[in-house]
Amino acid sequence: MPQQDKALRQPARFVGIFVAALLVLASGVAAQLPGTIYGQVVDENEEPVAGVKIKITDPERPDWKQEETTDGRGRYRIRLNNATVPYDFSFTKEGFQENRVGGVKVPARGEVRRNFDLVSASAALAAASAAGTIDPEAAKKGEAVEVYNQAVMSLRAQDYDTAVALFESAIEKQPDLGAAHAALARIHMERKEHQQALEHAKHAMELEADVDSMQQVLFTSHSALGNETEAQAALTALRSANPEKANLNLFNQAVDLYNAGNMAEAKAGFEQVLASNPDHAKAHYLMGLVYVNESDNAKARQHLEKFLAIAPDDPDAATAKEMLQYLEP
Image (cartoon, rainbow, N blue to C red; front, side):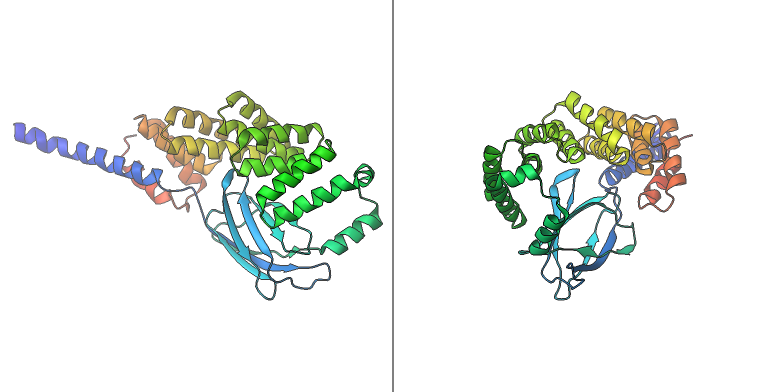
């Protein structure tokens, strides 16, 4: 009889081991899909610009970046491993005005062609003067503007220490130079100097400089410093201005909590994501894994089935299907 009991217990034990193995596998699977963007960088005369440095960043991951350079005909081809998020692109070359483009989306498992402009510094200055778009107050404080422009050039060259020093010098000469505060906020955020990032972001917002971008800085830096109330306030403001970006922040934050093993907090985060977007496939998938961890098979099945209904071709679909086979209804 003891031998028979042991045999009867083996299938249940196997299922437990199998599901546990699947969970380990699933937790290591990044919610990502690759995509490719290609095209050409041209100047104001539609001439190709060779040797342009292209920097791709993700506002929600300040420590991540990818860099490429255009070839002799100004062409580029970039493969991004995660096409589920919008990226910020910057195009720089000495003698040209930097071009920053935010919210660039790449089709998952596909390719998209997109050309970008890079205007020469002389042409940009001539156009601004002709259009009368140069700030009169800044013109009166030419010295501060000159220092600011030097800082921008250092930033383009990725000489961040020099750029920081020059932006700070420009602010000393012109304290209400909001663009300098905004630039410093972004630099400090990327360098994970979050307290300094917060100080400059607040000044920039008081001066109404790059407000939406500064809300992102506030959210990222407050989150890094553990200031949950302030981070949520920034997220609420960002949600009002840009709901899609705010929801992406919530999802990424919940994923980080999940990967760190903070299931209760991750669960709360995924619930917020789904409250805002009930058809967020990956949130359903990860919510299903959270409920598997809680041994709540019914709710786990509910979310995994919803995930498969929304995204049947997702890379994690096979794992979800296998898990469903071993979860009792």
